[in-house]
Image (cartoon, rainbow, N blue to C red; front, side, top):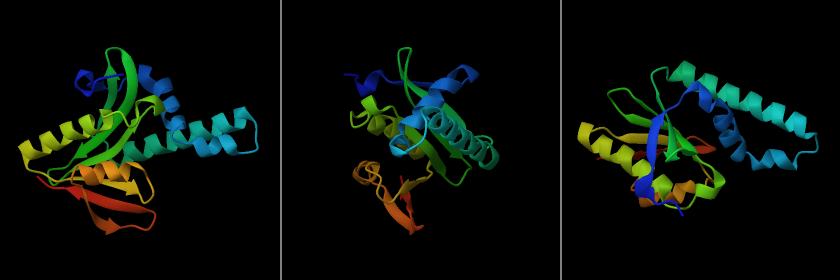
Length: 157
């Protein structure tokens, strides 16, 4: 079991591309139930991953894109953007085997510590039925906007 205090983060590099695609695919278990070939599923997942990456690049060109790791073992990613008014968590994703282990809480806790220092709120969008919502609520996030399928939630220092 990985201890949250042994987790580090570093900037994404081009060598992380295959890992990031694998990580994205791990969030889309629904695709595995589709009645099509594995090649078609893989092509779809890669297309969706690239669209998501292009969105982040176009909307948040100065975002901090980090790989979450323990030693050399890559475990997930954290994308954040800061604009002087807020720190936005764009994405936090862990591989399945590291979910519900305290690592996500630890990583988000680091973002909250930074927010305290710079006195900015932390905001993120979360799907209405995402299991991580309970984590965000435990950490003190509150719903500030209902966007239908998602909530905009905020933590204030």
